[in-house]
Image (cartoon, rainbow, N blue to C red; front, side, top):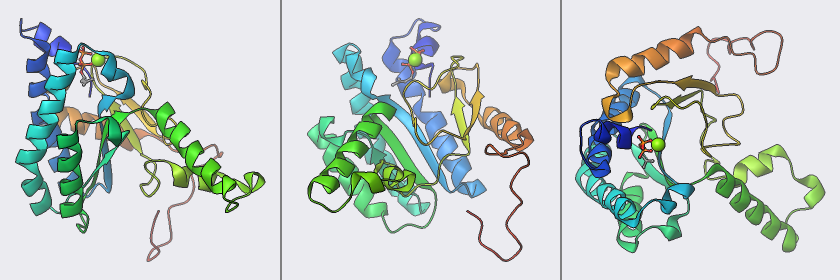
Length: 235
Ligand code: IPE
Ligand code: MG
């Protein structure tokens, strides 16, 4: 979700106004995904690197997270959304950690959209923490380093139980991943939208879905894998 700062600057407003205006498209995207039966949505809200921004901007963003969680959790729960934070939780303000824990506990049993909010998240951080988890298992003798497979590694990542994304959407005109889900994006379709995040509308979202619908996904094979036979669960 990129372009909040530029959106505000274009209006002669402080950057915070752009972050605040970015909440409404977040609500829209969650609602659209819920209604369309999307299984999982992961929003990159704040990166490991974003901590390096001026402290006034960082604390403003943290307060927006607090307010938004306080205001929206009941509605998310009513819509059967399962909320989770992925990222380095211990770096977050204590009050935010508590709110996040409460929102996660409240919505844990829901069967609707799985919503991951990536906060204080970095793809490299995720890979390192996965390595730490596996190394600890090796240390206690529960795992032999030679036996480590891709499945072990994927299982130690923050999104262990969430399927790899089919579609990645970045707004704001930059064509880069910026340390988002580095492992999980291996075969994800990448969509870049030039508009700024606060302007992201249902029509923009539908453009991204239309782009996705045109892709032929081969996953390194010559032909796309056949669709699962009728009556069989897809994956
Ligand atoms: C994205 O918008 C929001 C966060 C990174 C928290 P930016 O703040 O990066 O907006 P630009 O790129 O300066 O316009
Ligand atoms: Mg930016």
